[in-house]
Image (cartoon, rainbow, N blue to C red; front, side, top):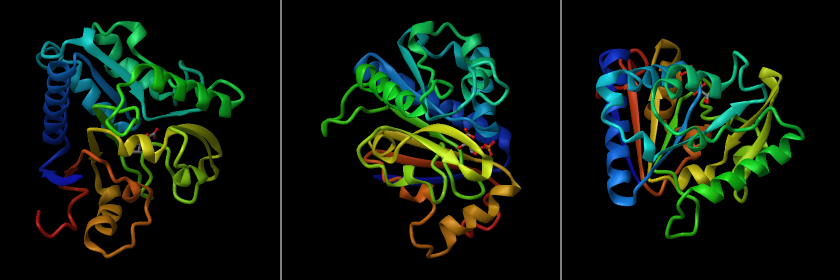
Length: 246
Ligand code: 6PG
């Protein structure tokens, strides 16, 4: 695993770099294996990246016929609900590019019982994702955001999903949000070829400080990720203001 931190002067340059990175990952995967399998994150930071990718200068670089889009997590709401990550990604990117509809795999967190919805999505991952040399379904890229509490995807502190080492998708009740979610679990995130964490804003400076300048034992959910591939952090100046090497 190679972990790299890149800081950016502002959200715009971070988003621009994120779009370039996404395009590079897509081109490499399609050239090498004929397809690009990517898991999208929810959140406002990833949304800015999707909106940038939808703009002509980036969108035209990508062979959308070879792109397969999945979700890293989803709220237990209908796909047209304002809180839906699927709706957000569709509005920001997927409805603006010629990706075949059958290559967008919505996480059915609104379906009940939610534990069966988790199992159903795991079946989708096992059916469509290539398999790593260790026998794990493998994303080319997993996009992640970071919450101020160190959560990523819907892996929240203190939840059982953090300890799931067999299933690839877990149903998780987030008490502080009083809501159910589906989330990819650590084993499938760890199996990814590339993981990109996007962090923007003053409200993330404290958690970034905790993660990178203190000897905190690896306790925050995002610290539990140990990808076999590369893990890149794109952090803007506001979130990185406590990092010494800025
Ligand atoms: C979600 C996301 C979540 C998000 C972070 C960061 O469904 O909410 O998956 O993990 O990425 O909370 O969100 P912001 O970028 O909006 O701060």
